[in-house]
Image 1 (cartoon, helix red, strand yellow):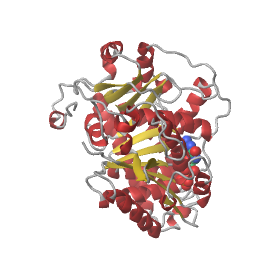
Image 2 (cartoon, rainbow, N blue to C red):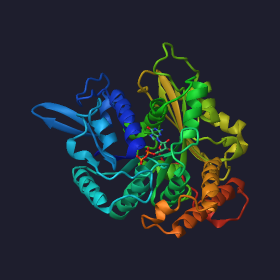
Image 3 (tube, rainbow, N blue to C red):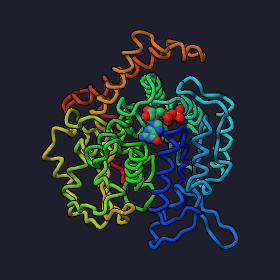
Image 4 (cartoon, rainbow, N blue to C red):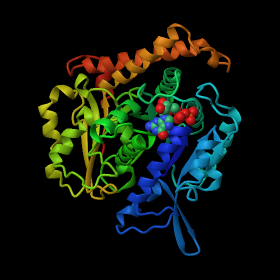
Length: 445
Ligand code: GDP
């Protein structure tokens, strides 16, 4: 079968910093060095590599080049990337910067730059066998990743309506927050993601920070620490896209299995065991422990408690030398049946991949669609309301041509989203809401 490519777009500081680490881990998993040469020892490493890498053969040697566009309105971050370990791997014409900084303002995206990016994207898309979709890496709290990222998302949606739009979206937390207007930026972005995204993988700096301090025992975690564990989870989440397997082999199948209602596409990743790159010894966990951990809030990259909600769907991935007999996800579901909606049968999938992640011998990842995610939106909405009630800092946005209406709409749409999650949290198999019968997704092989 032909390769179905994914095009990565990393936008803004967080997007590019997380992206740099994600690509480093991806290279290592596929046995590719920083110059793009393959030195691996397992044919499985190359079998699905074309999903994320362009294979460039030149004079008998083959290089694997990340299919990625690096965007920032502030040249600093891209300059750091260029001079970093992967600097020579990304082709020079895939960097896009502008002399204008977004200055943490959602409204400061410029239209000319979007056109320039679409040109690069078109060129990349044309050289693909069959582009399956896009993945955008960005934060929602700043200006570029959130505002400009949203603008890109809507433009791509317009131009590629039948391609999948996945995002890895980093939500702000007061624990690592830099500016006071982050709740505005986040709220405006969530509103865009509801309408223009197909799969939003939520990464919450609050949860990432807590995992660093509690599990990895890092006293004052910096972005590098956060990004390290975020990248581990991203590699876990994308495993089924990059290695041959039965289930969830592309973004469309992931969407079909995980998103029962199009608006409710906000997914929470969990990962186990997190490792500390500086630790000398790695704990060996039993498969039962790994399974438990995936459904434990301590391993979730979103700061909310799944025990306060219900899982609509989940996809679990186990990596390493693990046999399907050891994986008892079904037993766990029966034991905790009140936390899984009963009106979507077989709503937790299990897939096994022999290739382990870098450094670790085994790992487990889950991507969950839980109604508990409403906690994340409530938290963001609460901090939004505190400043919006007083109309504080709004002139920065209206000065860039935004209307107050856009803020009110974003607020109302988020309230609706929260209500929808609550509705399906309370729904039972015996309700006669018709759409529950019609829209039931089938687990697809
Ligand atoms: P932009 O360049 O204008 O998109 O702004 P940023 O990406 O710096 O957005 C600011 C938000 O992203 C804040 O909530 C920061 O805490 C967060 N952030 C910035 N850099 C990083 C990073 O490298 N990793 C993580 N996890 N969060 C980041």
